[in-house]
Amino acid sequence: MIKAFLFDLDGVIVDTAIYHYQAWRQMANGLGFDISEEFNERLKGVSRMESLDIILAEGKVELTDEQKQILATEKNENYLKLVSKMTPADILPGVSDFFAQLKQTSIKTALGSVSKNARLILERIGMLNDFDAIIDGTKIAKGKPDPEVFLKGAEELGVLPTECLVFEDAVAGIEAAKRGGMKAIGIGSKQVLTQADLVFENLSGVDLKNLLAELQ
Image (cartoon, rainbow, N blue to C red):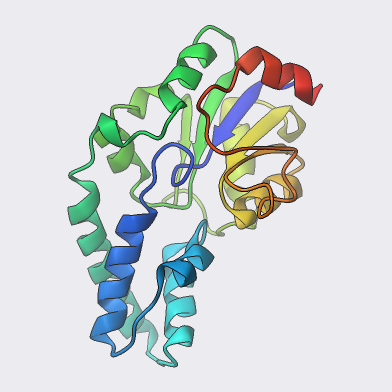
C-alpha cells in the first residue's frame, strides 16, 4: 500500500533547468567553450560538483579541487540571482491541483532533491509548507542514481521504501527510486523514462484515486 509520495523538484514541481543552463553556460563561456541545451539534459538530477566535472570533461579543462570549488560557488551565485525572481506562477501545470487532492488523503509527502537551493525555491513559489519532509543537497552525501535522497525521505516520513511512490523527470532519478525499492512515476517522455512504472507528460489532469488504483 502506498503511504507516501516523494517528489523531485526540478522538472516535476518547477522547471529551473533553464536557469541552471544559463548559469553553467556562462561559466563554460568564461573557460573558453560552449555547452548546448541538449548537453544540459545530461545534468538533470546530477549534483552540482558532478555536473561541474561533466562540463569540464566536455571542454577538456582540468582544474584543481580549489579552482572547481570557486567555479561551483560562482555558478551557484549566478543561479540564485535567477531563481530568486521565481513566483507561484512558475509552478508547473497540474501541480497545485494534484497537491490539493493529496491534502484530502492521509498520504505523506516529501521532497527528494539533490539541489542545495530547494528550500529557497519552495519559499519563492509558496510551497514550503506542502511537504512533511524536505531532503535536499544539504542532507545527502550521494547524488542520484544513488537512492540515498529517497531512502532518507522514507525514513523521515516513517514509512518503508516499498510504501513510497517517487515522482521524477530524470533517468537518474527513476533509477534511484528503483534502486531504493520504490515505485516511480515518470514526468516527461515515455521514450526516455523507460524504467518508470507509469509516465505522464506533467501532472495536469492526473486523478489521484485512478493513479493509486492503477498501481495496485
